Length: 403
Image 1 (cartoon, rainbow, N blue to C red):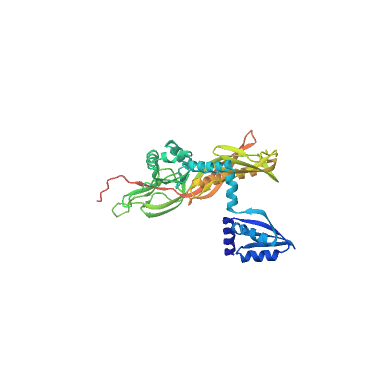
Image 2 (cartoon, rainbow, N blue to C red):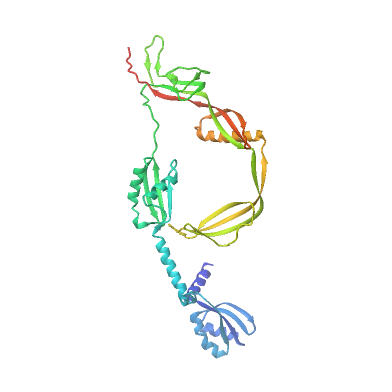
C-alpha cells in the first residue's frame, strides 16, 4: 500500500496525462509501448476500438512513433501533476504576484506580537497584569524588535509588589508571560515563645481541647472577640507558675448573616429546536459577514465559536473565523411561589458563604426571613450557624521570673 502511494506521489510530481487511444490494433499498441519501456497505468477499455489510460510526460512523447506505425489516434483528455499546475500558476501573473505579496505580508505580520498570555497567576487578575504590560509597550500589535523583555520584566516587578518573579518569552507571534506571586506567610509565633489563645470572633463554646496551657472558658460559655480561651500562664496549687506556649482547639458556634434578593416574576426561555447560523471573518478589530444573512428569529439565544485561521507552531495571526449559532426560543413568564423563591435565595447565600469559609468549617443550621418589596422582588435575610475553631495565638508580653 505504501509503495503504491509513493508511486502515485512520484507520478504527480513528475506530471502525467490521461489519454484516449482509438484504433483497431489496441493490443499491438500496448505491446509496442511496453517494448519501448513506456509505462501505462489505470488502463480502461471503453469499447473494442477505444481505451483510456495514464502515461508519464516522457512516455507520451515517445508514443508518436508508435502511433504512426499502427495507425492509431492518441488524444489527451486531462493533464495532471506539478508541471502543469506550475505552468497554470505562472501564466497568471497577478496570481503569482498576489501569492508572493501574501507571503511577504505574512512574514511582515509575524514580526509583531498579536497575543499576550499570562500564566501562573492565581490571585491576581490577568486583566490587571495585561494592563500594566501594555503601559510598558508589550501589547497586541507591538513590533518584536522594539520589545526589551528584560526591561519589561524589571518594570513589572517594580510596579507590582505582589510578584516575586516574571519571565517573558516571545514565541512566534505570542508573548507568554510566566509569573510567580508573592506568598504572604501568616504571622507565626515561635513554638518556644509563651502565648495565649484568644477568640478571633464572637461565639458560644461547643467543645474545647487543651493540649498545652490552662482552659479559661468552658463549654456553653459565650465569648467575645479577644477574650482569653486558653491561657499560657499555668497556675496550679502547690506548684510554681509556668509560662508556656498555649496549644489547643476551641470549637464554637458562630453566626453569619447574608442577604439575597430574589425575583418572583421570572422570564423563562425555552428553545424550539430551530437554529440559524451566522459566519463572520474577524481580522484584528474588524468583522466581515460571510453569509450576509440576518437572524430572522424574534427571540433567540446566541452561542459563539471562534477559531484562529492562521496558527502554525508559534505563529498566530489575528485572523479568526467566528460562527454564531442562533437558537430560537419561546419567552414565557413564570411566577415563583414565595416559598420557592425563599428556598432559592437561601441556596444562593449558602453557596456564597461556602466560598468565603475555610473548608473545615461546617454549616450546622440556617434560618431565613424575608421582606416583600414593591417590584416583584423579595429580600431574604439568612442567618447561618457554623461550627469552627475560633482560637488565635496571642503573644504574652510579660517579663516572667520563676520564684
